[in-house]
Structures are given as C-alpha cells and as structure tokens.
Length: 365
Image (cartoon, rainbow, N blue to C red; front, side):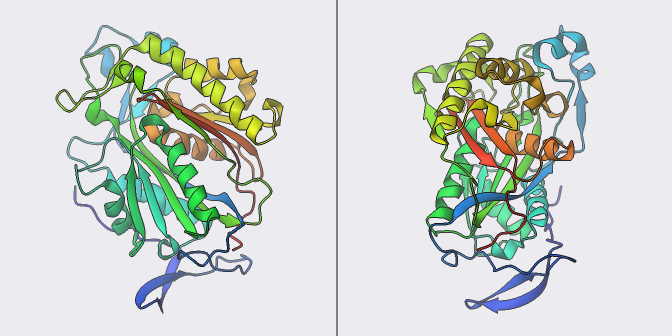
C-alpha cells in the first residue's frame, strides 16, 4: 500500500511565518474570530489545557467471531460471554499503520477547526510502529503536513494514550507548546497469535486522536494519576524473539480492575470531585467484564459507561480515543461533560484522570 499525504481540508491558504511556508486555517462558516494558537511560544503560561477535537480511523477489513470458530475450539457465544467482543478490524498483512494514524489526526484537527501547520508537537502512542526506527510519529507528521512540528513515539502499552495526554497538557500549560496532537495508533494483529485460544480473539487495530490546546477553562485536563508495577511484567508481554502477546488472563483481569479503580479514586480526589460528578467513564476497552467490574468497584451505574469493545476489540493505546469518538457519535458526550478516563496495560502500567469534554468550542489563546 502506497502511503499518500493526508490533506487538511481546513488549511487552504499559505503564509510565510518564521522563515518557512506554512498553511493558515480558513474560518469555518459562522465561526467566531479567535486568536491563533501554535507554534510553540505563542501561548501564555497560566492557561488550562483542554480537549478541542477528536478523530478516529479504523481499517476496512472486518474480522468477526466466525473467523475464529473456523480455526479454534471456540464459538461466538463463548467469545461474547467472556469478552463482550463481537468483531474487530485488522489491517491487511502488508498495510502500514501510519496512514491510519494520519487519518485519525486529520479528523481530530478538522473537528477542532485547526490546521496541521499549527501543531507544535505530535505524540503518537504505540507498541506496533511500522519500523524499529524511525518512529511512527515523524511519518504521521509528514502525512498530515505538520512540517516543522516535533514528533515522538511513546510506549506505555494500553495506558499509552493517558501518558501522552498528561505530557501534552504539561507542554501546553507551561507554554512550551500551543497545540499538541495526541494519537493512539495500534496494529495488534501483528502481535496476535491466531492459534492461541486465550488471546487470539481479543485484539484489533485502529487509531484515535485528540487536539490539546490552552484556553480559559474551568477544568480542562486535570492532573493524571500514573503508576507502574514492573514486578508483574511477566504476566503480560511480547518479547523480541516470539513477538506475540502472551498473557496470564486471570491475573491481568484482577490487577486491571483494582488498579483502574484505585487510580480513578485518586484522580477524583485530586480534582476535588466524587464519582457522582462524572457524566461518563471511559476505561481502556480491553474486555467488557473488566470495564464493568471497575465501574462496580467505583459505584458507577452502567448508564455512565462508554463501551465499544464489542465493535473494535482491544486496540491497546488507541482504545480510549476511539471510545471517546464513538461516545460522542452516540450522543453520550456533550460539550462540558465531566469524563473519567482510566487505563491499564503491560508493564504493569496504569493511569487515570478527569477531563472536561470540549469545554470551549475554540482555542482561545
């Protein structure tokens, strides 16, 4: 598959700034005039980082549970009962991940009304880059036209997106960046052992992204609670020789529920909130039973859960932005909603935090 450039539909004018040609975003019909954010150094310190746009992208190839019925001693009913998963998307064997990530990023920028030229830094969270080096982020930056932006890969397994979001918020609030794209992009089909009944049905491919920028916000992106327990690393891993995901399912389940619930409580305390203040809880979409068990530990009703694992399976660090995009499409997320985020993954690493969803429509600094 030949990788082509993803064009940003919002960017239609060219202007010379700081000695290089960039693109300036045209104002959408009916949009209010607003100060320009990005490049780095143009945002005043002391403002709050917030989420201003979201984008998602999935491969075209769909793998339903019948695919595994033909290969393993399993059936659709067992898979759904144990995991909640009904289908997932996989890239083709020779299909690169970068164009999928670029599509998610372009969609997020369009949703925020920003252009690729305004991006100061692109953080791509992934455990499945297309190459050992260079990382995925520089190629994604090239594809979306974010020329001159900083670009870096981050590997924190299934918690990667939250680690990236925490770093993006810190960059914005210290004035080191005006606009940061955080993209979770994974091709877990590359690490899936299709002969292993315990793990083969669990994983999918996909990409999701958000735009982080500064604004005069009430909450924005609150402080994240992050942690790790490397002593448990042997319970979930993929090594350099085998290059397949191996997991002790019961132990991972137990740790995931406990750590996500604990970190969410700490994040709520840090934000001076209670569980009742949450409008929606978006946990890493590993398994519907894990999400529901963590919610039960927190005392959250099912109506406040965002669950799309049935449609995309476990997409590692892409799962939370994909779930956010789906929740907005489903009408579960409205501007100003208070959202709890939690994730747990190999390492063990985990994280949780509270954000307000699109508290303002436009970046105001």
